[in-house]
Image (tube, rainbow, N blue to C red):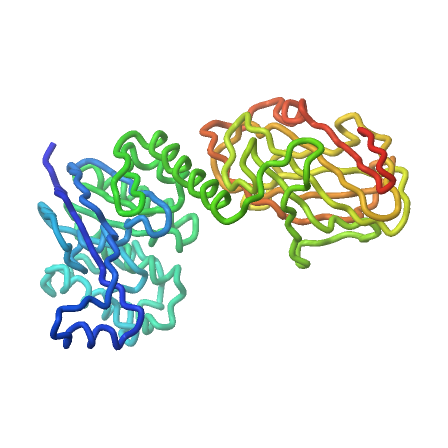
Length: 430
């Protein structure tokens, strides 16, 4: 295989000034005093990408992904290190980069292909191909400042891939288009990657694992992993989860409460999340995944523990507690209630009470999931009253690389428990 991209010891340092005037003071300083702080966006990164290879680049915000791509494309210069690109390169970086908003789409095609090194005759030969791929109809004759973000990325991508580049670089641009155009782009990228090196930065880890066999993971400007895609995503989640846990310990002295100790740090839901009759209201809630309070990420087999502080305006004899998990598209994935899990006889006193339950996170595909917490009332399914729901109050990212399996709805509740602590001090299990 032929090397298309070669990066050696790439470093980028930015000078950060607290005030604009500090730049002038530093330039005019007779003693050479520094008024800036150095920020290392990239720290000695080295890697190669071969033709016929599609490489993903992932990392937390601020990890250095976009800085790396800007150096590769020549938008900015490195502070140290070298970059070698073999052959013709095309790039999709920030949406609208290289476009004149006053020009029509057609005029911007000629402008961008000129910047890519095309002659007008070459652009004329490829014009129909570009317009057909962009598929924006008569808007091609309108100023691009009137375009939607989807139309913008259609035209930009169509121009970029028309060059049949040896290196194609994409930074999040495809996340703007509709799903059908994204599929069209991915098919085109697959075809290009047969003979070119493709570098993709994306926060869509599901797409990264399916599209790229090799993935680079950046963390605080360093290349910390270079290898198989699913292992790279696992490494990314470890980094993310570790930073969440570290930040929690650093910013608060609150620890996981043991039974009988002080209460955990509760959160108050936003008013916009509430719905229901509200005779009983979830005023605050707390959750943890295994030993991590308010965790963002969750793997298959982890225990999710939820505790709720409830205020009821009256006594209730037929109370139902539960949760519902939906994906980012709003589809219900799984859930359970105290009634369906075998706890039909729960009462609630007037005043403040506490309720808690836990469940095992199932083996579902990776992605974003939202947990709705709820209180209902009634014995019969058709006659149940929704008292209080906190809609999508908890956001978890599943890191399990698997598929939804049969029996999931029964298996998830094997460890379900519900504890009630009444104002009088008595407690019981529903």
